[in-house]
Length: 465
Image (cartoon, rainbow, N blue to C red; front, top):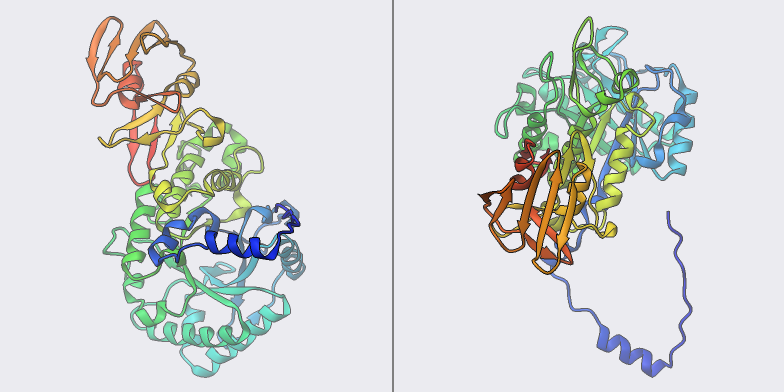
């Protein structure tokens, strides 16, 4: 937090009135207000914290980098009572630390199982009767007050065609009670395999049910036994819930920090080999590991910044605590782009070279990649060439740049749509230009001439070199 600095200004009253009259801002339209917003500044970063499952100290949790912490799990019984937390002191400690860091703390009610037994049957029994539903709502609200929580999430995994009506009744009862308490109410939902179609439980959710929640978290993971959380699944999950009428700001993209089918945690994979932080698959034994490395999570965060209102990490205990930390990466990204407008954010490009992000920022003075009017990506030449250990020489008179790397020589002429590669002229689909005293070149033409392969991910505007 940056402390505000106050300045005392004394002006004659007449002068002050004149200044206010002349400088009075024009009325801002709704469209202009939307354009003036900064998505990164309102972005939610949610971390599930399985206090009863992991023996992790609370002080290890970076609540200063989170906007919300969800303590998991509060377990209901079939009569609507609650099973006492195993580590209640840990929740109290978490609330104190998180609130000091201005992060909200929610309790997750339910989860998939308790002591190895699926909880779906418990939810079905308690939600079927009004008396047990109300008893559960009363107990949860008392729990929220006792622990000074900010709200709760409903984790009934999952209702079916026969019980969806009871799910709706339970959600409506919680909504009414939490409104009286002044608390927030969220829910976890499944991901979807396409923008139009998802699993049955998603399709069963009525508009009235969805309107009960302040937000939903789309669990864009566990869609298969192996590659369970690919990038495309995040894209389709976000698109599906937007199509169902969930507002952008109320949709949070769930991201896993564990692998399948090995169930190894991200932090353990990275501890074994740092290079594992930058890939999504490792041939571990006895079972292999499909997971999300830091680059894929960065891409998912960019998708959420453009199309949703936040990300949820499950489980935050599984993050590393060094420079491969996913949470630290997300915080650095949000800090870097916090002042971008929605339009600027749509044009923002990420460049990954040999697995490592090449960070561009206005503050660095090295230029920022952009897409020109011909829909071609132009990159600042010097910063990119230095990242691959190429030598560059600029001739200010001829307005040409010479690039040398591993025996290859490329000559680039400003404002020409061709380059000379080892003495041979090759066409480019866009010309090199000078902008703000920096030479920008078409990325693909130059890097492919040096033998690099280029991959473009449209959804996140990410370039892999």
